Image: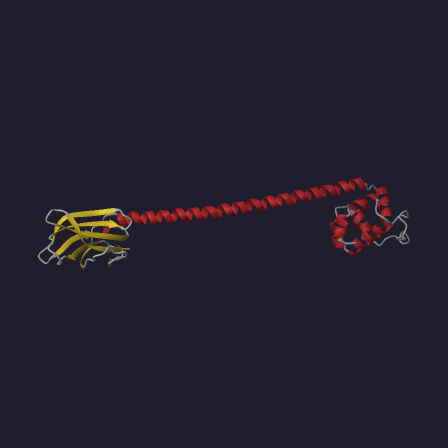
Length: 259
């Protein structure tokens, strides 16, 4: 007989009601005697635990005939005479089992509640972090697009390319503090003297367009730009010339990298 057998076969209930065979009762008493910790954990009265912790009455068990009383039956009868009620013991055991089940349910509910609270805290933390990153990005973008007075003046001489570029032909990086960009574009080729310059972001947003700008005596097209007028990104510069009919025709391209 072992713990699993005692639990599955309801040995404790049958022991209290005297329904065990002599051999079962003897095996149960022997198991209780050999396992005092198990005996103390049983939901039965203390006086019965004391009886079970003693050696069985000698000559009370044969282990063969069911009708011969065992020491377990004698113990139950003696306890009844001393005021022990088996029905009351079973009811006490049921109450103890019900209380244990309720405790297990409460523990599971508490664990589930803690798990939900932890998950909610993690989700809230991620949302706060996301909002913080969005706010930081918006603040940076707002700061980058605010016009600032240029602190220095930098002169650059640039050469046009014939085909539309896919990457910056002139990378400036992000300029902080702002600079005044004094740009000279080589326009020595051809006889065109008036130009139109269109600056767009690479995502298609129009930034500015300058019409009928003349080349100077050095055959250069010069323009000055405040770097704070541009946000971080790449900017496509389209250069067109006016022909004798007043119509524009492509001349060249530039791409400025400001990031």
